[in-house]
Length: 294
Image (cartoon, rainbow, N blue to C red; front, side):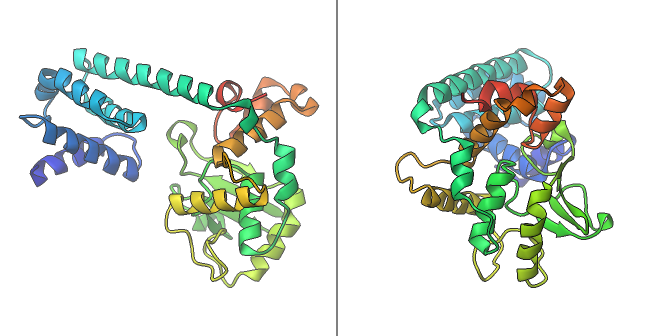
C-alpha cells in the first residue's frame, strides 16, 4: 500500500465530523481492504466496481465489532449507490445480530442491583477507593479514564473531559465520549453529597492534572483499556465476584434500572427524564431499550 493511498483516506475522512481516533481507525480499515483487492478503492468507481468482493471479505472476518468498524468506514466515504445500500444493509443486519446475541447471552442471574454495588463501593479518599466509588456514582461509560481537573472555564477546551472545581460544587464537562458527535457537550452536576469526599480526596493529591490515577504514585492511566481493567478488578474484588465478572456496562444497566423504577422518576416529565439519562451520556430510548434490565 502506497503512502499516497494512506494519505488519501486520512484526507478524505478529515472532511467529516470525526474524532482523530476515528479517522485513524477508519483509515486503517480502508487500507486493510485495499490489501485484499487487486486494485485500490481510492475512488468511487473502484468501490462501486468491487463492493461485492469487499462485502465477501468483511463477512469472512471473525469479530462482529471488527466487521462493523469496516462497514462504518466504508459508509462514510461511499457515495449514494448500490454499494452504499449494500454496506448499510449488512451493517443493519450485523447490528440486529449483535443485539440479539447480547440479549440471549445476558442472563438474569448476572444482574446485580445498584443498591448492592453501592453498598460495597463506599466513599473513600485513597486512590483506588475513590476511583471505584466515583466511577460507580457517575458511570459515564469509560470516559472518566483521562478526565482533567479545571479550576477556570477558560482552561477547558472543547475536546477533552473535565471536572470543573468550584467553591460551591463540582461539574463534569464531557466532550469526548462514544456518541458526543450527536449529543454535543454534556454537563453533569456532581451531587452535593459528594462534595465533601471530593474536596478531601483532592487535598491529598499534589497539584493533580487528572482526577483519577492508576496507583498511589499518581501515575495516570495510559489508555482507556488500562482504566477498564483496573475498574473491573476493583469492582469484582469488592463484590467478591470471581465468576461472571461485572463490567462498566453492567453497572450502567443496574443504575438505569434503579433510576427508572424509582417513584421520583415516574413523576418526571419526558424532558426531565431525558436530562436524567444524559447523566449516562445517552437518551431515554437507549435507556429503556438496552440498559433497563428489570
